[in-house]
Length: 309
Image (cartoon, rainbow, N blue to C red; front, top):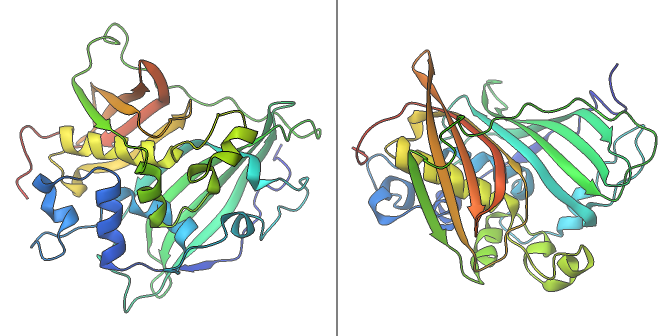
């Protein structure tokens, strides 16, 4: 039985980006000077970091700061109680890379197509809204990326909707939990969320203490998608030679908030499970030993040594 709102399609939205946007994104998630193909526009192999499209539903086609709350409230889902975006957190995100984005959308027309996959009532804790979002070339109909995302609306459950299916878990390989194949660390500063938000995700929760205080976090927290994108970068750099062609799929569940100034540690495991050349990778991201991203899974072509780009 389908849930209320399932199949509802949001109006298509134009999305666009400049090379400058691509450069800012790469620097903001941790790309470094030994990866000039992501952070220098004149590099012969200049490329968009693969997860960039995850920011486009926030940025859309503007270069200006936006009213985050107003943008989230624009299209309520039919058959579902009105949900307050001021009290929402990321649940889980999966991104599939079908075609590499061009370095700029200039001269092309791209659009975001979004639809609701399900709305689930988790009782007192809240409501989960699962959506599918694709970035599509409007002229040709080609799909470049497909994302499946769940948003958790805190304390907004108990309206009688379906509980929804249980999600599949992707833990570290059994017996290897304490011996990852690769480990990557990123030290954040108090200003890290202020840099990342310039990509287009202007949620006040990450810029000023008041929203986080009201939600019980004690102040501002990092964007969940910062940790998610930073972990994608860690996997691509450590296992994929920083080559964007070496990652096909990436996903993780948001398990706990991260405070600005924390050190993020991503632990990675090769599973040896290879299909059509793509190996399943598992990962966990932690702060002070506490898991902040769980269910980490990617499909990659693993290469040894530094990038040849």
